[in-house]
Picture 1: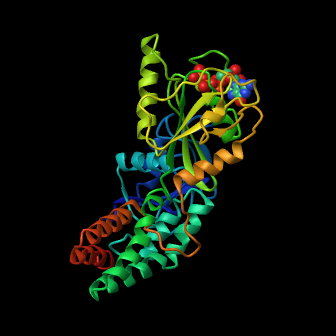
Picture 2: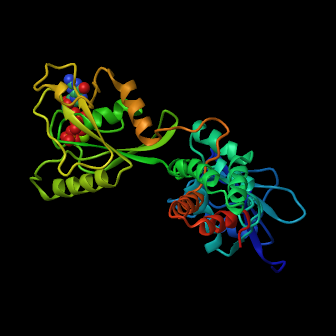
Length: 378
Ligand SMILES: Nc1nc2c(ncn2[C@@H]2O[C@H](COP(=O)(O)OP(=O)(O)OP(=O)(O)O)[C@@H](O)[C@H]2O)c(=O)[nH]1
Ligand SMILES: [Mg+2]
């Protein structure tokens, strides 16, 4: 890198935060930032930085977040940009700087798996864990739970002790589905016929009016995702268009999307109306939970004929605690005790699952070599 090179580096840790700080360093730092930045007060930045001053405005055009620019006295010319701390906002600012002649410098980079240990890798995941519950599971892995479990499993496989290895590997594989969702939320889809109260239920679970609710059937036309925590698990709750025979092209598209979303969800809440003839899914989505809504109204049919259904009222809030328990149990039937080993990324979950399958098929050596590779990456 020549002396004339201007670099930029994200100084704040990876992950979502309120504010991110990006340093731009080098002889062209001011020139590059000045070209990209529009002060909110109008005009341009001064031709040279004035120490101790800062400006509020936008970087890289109206599509970027508002940014404050503060020149910092240092041996080498250096500007700091403070922008919204969302991952996407930081990405946009970095891309804008890179497109305009600055080079990325990984000043604050955290160690990667290849360069470090499971603890270093878990620390990176910890910055991305969206809830306290998932963060505490990842923290157990920072403290070595997964690494210890892999070590004893490899030792058992190497010693030719399949029953012990099967037990240890089985315990790890049991948490593979959970490990895939410590950072990425589960997708829970709310589906059913028009007007059964899907949007009302989404709003009741979210605690605010996220979806439009009206007495007119066909109000929701497209998928609407709401991020929330259910019993501490990160969930994307997806409201959908009511499923019936579509009367118009737009509605038809919404219904097709609703069907696909229900079929591919981690969990589908199929809502039926207690006060109207029930409409059942066709085909029945895998992982469906039946929810009978509007139970405070006079029933139009015998809900006792579906004993496994959860009975709620989105309007009064009755039954919502029970629904939350069922969703939580549907996503994580057997939550880990504190200190348990959990394969805490999708990649680790895949390896553990594949090794457990190899062992179940009697291939001890394949299982051993897959698990050993985790301890000694190429
Ligand atoms: N009494 C009663 N009315 C409810 C309840 N939940 C929803 N409603 C009413 O039912 C009507 C439809 O509610 P929505 O939440 O818009 O229903 P939806 O299933 O999203 O409807 P579409 O988007 O049109 O498919 C509205 O008038 C709601 O106020 C409930 O628990 N009790
Ligand atoms: Mg709706």
